[in-house]
Length: 274
Image 1 (spheres, rainbow, N blue to C red):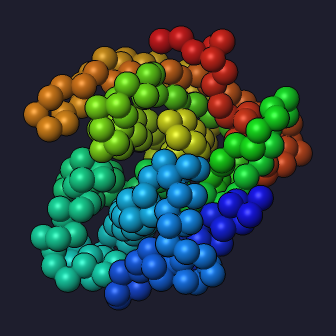
Image 2: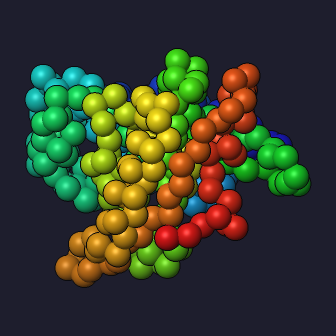
């Protein structure tokens, strides 16, 4: 439990310092958590499978992307400076490595339709829970915003998505896996109605919360997502085929608790079909 405590404290420290003018370093985090640098690095690699530096970069670029969606009047340079980048070029280079597109294209894609959707590429990790029937602790992500939406749309349908065979893509490189996750989000976003919202709820799991009580509407979105299966993503000059599992879900339990949302929206292995 000491390792989990160190991880949680370090994640909280990172979230509080993502927008520091001077980028937070691993040494700073370790000192703030009263731990050695080597101990902190080992905890990250074992539990998150990223280095501390890579995790910080992905969190910064996720928060920067959300800021582009939520505050489109801000210039890309303003956002770059806010996250500690001294030039538009340096920020664009890092952003493109994570999202597989430059900031201008991302901003245009997500704001040209005149609507704002939440999309998390690399969600904040908030804790560990034990799922029913499992004897190990599973890492979960912050879906508090999704939970808040659900409470106001309890009779609405979800469209859940899951990347098919992400592990082989990650074996090409971690950046290829990031590109696949970003593309999965884009595909789900592309079928959204004006008031639908997309979230990443796990490693390769996604949830599209509609604003409709009509199951046929959710089924239509699901079929549109599945129709894109097999379309490739471009990564370092190579085509990588990408497909998603998808299903529609309606949570009938009106008193579902926050911690119960995540497992209810995961697609069981027995139901994964194209």
